[in-house]
Length: 292
Image (cartoon, rainbow, N blue to C red):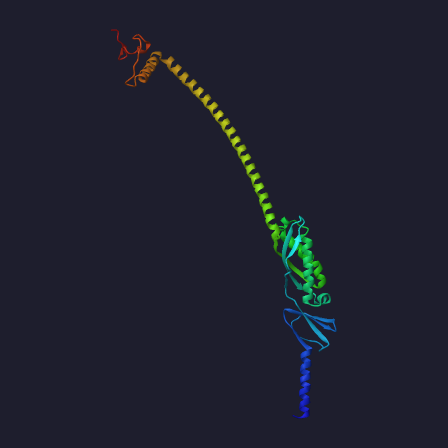
């Protein structure tokens, strides 16, 4: 191999190695920060092939996707002095790579500092709430409050806090049974009070219904007595009018009714005087009195 060819190969090799050291690629999910002797030079957000000064400049890659932060469960004392075990999860995004580098150096350092901020704000926000609030509809608003509180501190790290969720809010095992028993006793007391109020209301309703029933019956009895009296009065008047129209016929008709009523049964026995008024019409044949 000639000396010229060897030199050419060496030069090409050095050029290729230099080109390798002077180029780097950034993927779609990354953003890069080019630093020179620890000093940031430029931020690269676009994916593709990029160039740098070999050896002198270095590239720090940071993820630009939505990232998860899963801090360990924390024991927090609520405002009503109940101890709670809170398990939360956070989602964040690096929006300023330069600021993140200046405050945390890299993504690992940013996670550590952000984890401290999340835990601190969890304790602060939830420590001002009673245990019942964490189980009610206010829980959604509390998560927003925690997110906003964390975001106020995370922005100084070049990080945007997108969401904070409370996965579990539980009582410590040592306190759970006592709390549950106290809650059960309280609910049983409320149930007894509700049943007592229900019985009281039932007695009141029954008494009111009985009073109304008595009044209705009394009014109905009064009205029926008035109607019977009016009917009896009309009947007496009708009988009187009929009697005055034909006294003899009326006496005859009433006597026939009396005979029918008293002699309708075969075992009827009457003990009367022969000249009793009851036998007044027994001597009539064909409506003519028998004089024999």
